[in-house]
Amino acid sequence: MTELKIDFVGHQGDGVAHLNGHAIFVPYILEGETVSVKGSGPRRDIQSIKEPSPDRIEPVCQHFGTCGGCQLQHMSKASYEKWKIGLVTEPLTKVGITFKPDEIISFEVASRRKCVFNAQRTPEGMQLGFTEKSSVEIVSIDACPVLVPEINGQLEQIRDLVNSVPTLKHPLRVSVLVTKNGLDISIEDGKPLSEAECQVLIKKSITHKFSRLTVNQDTLIKTAEPHIEIASTIVSPPPAAFVQALKQAEDTMSDIVADYLKVCKHVADLYCGIGTFALKLAENSAVYAVEESGDALESLDKAWRQTGGKLKQVKTEKRNLERRPVTFGELKKMDGLVFDPPRAGAELQCKQIAKSRVKKVAAVSCNPITLATDLEILIGTGFKVKRIIPIDQFKYTPHVEVVVLLER
Image 1: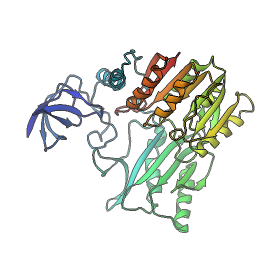
Image 2: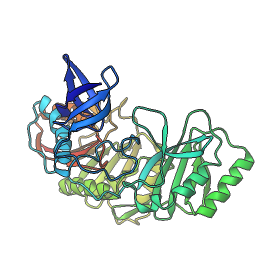
Image 3: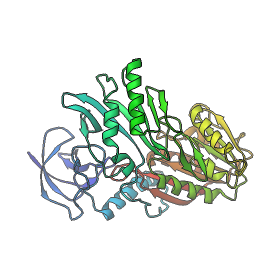
Image 4: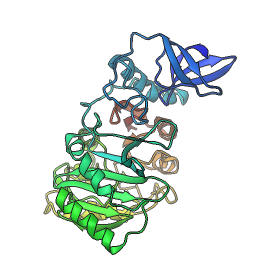
């Protein structure tokens, strides 16, 4: 047993101490706390907390400390938001960006409309939940405080459905999205289904009133079109499509971006997905929307066409922007642009934006580290930061969304 004084909370939410010149990581611990730990190596487990921090609060979930989903429920609101702002400012400062961000925008706890469960059949029955921290074991849950009531209220029905899916050695991935017509469920990593197994799953989906069931990328049944609202449109996303986890966060980000770019006549939306920004931007501007997923673009195009001409033109293009970014020449008609790339960032694309004549850019990111690299490229060619807006879409986790508005 070793006693440690925690120096700070690291980027992944673990307490960080130093022992004999080496960093030691302890989960579920706060800055300034003195703890006894067990184990060896750089990662240790708590034995006891000798001196708790005044910022320590009671967690909101009974599974805190075992479930790996929410690492920071024990942190007071003030210290938690300060820590999250630090996740944004630290990598930006390293590349010379010292612009002060807005206060973090947060939402009520039970707001998450989309999640991915893990499921595994065991001698005790079907386990449906989330993996333990630093483990492949599943913590089976009967409620999750960050999920919306529409998911929590049907966990037993989801478990009943998943129990009829033949499993392999590794867990199933169960994506659940709340839509206007019921839960849209996509299950992956199971064994191929027999005809009899398909029929059982179809019957259960009808009984439980799920809007759509997709297993191993094959849609077995669609009792109703799974609709979600984006801006003033109705979108039917593809199975397991990327959809913002919180409807409130989606609306907040699209409102910020659309308001900033509303003076632009022609706007590019790069990594546009199903149209989170494009469909809002089209209320004021002609939009050129680029995305690698053909299914996502099909959903976006259908939603735009169904508005009956109420929106300005949305032209779509299927394109892998990591391999073939939109060039500065192709952007010559654009006076505004938004990009929202995967966690790996948009370095090659930003080099083309930097060479273009685009005046106003909204950079959206779920990874402040790669965002810093992207912004450094843009600022190096004359762009200036106008606002930095952190958005806490994934409460109690070390993830933060950021919207940065730039102009030159």
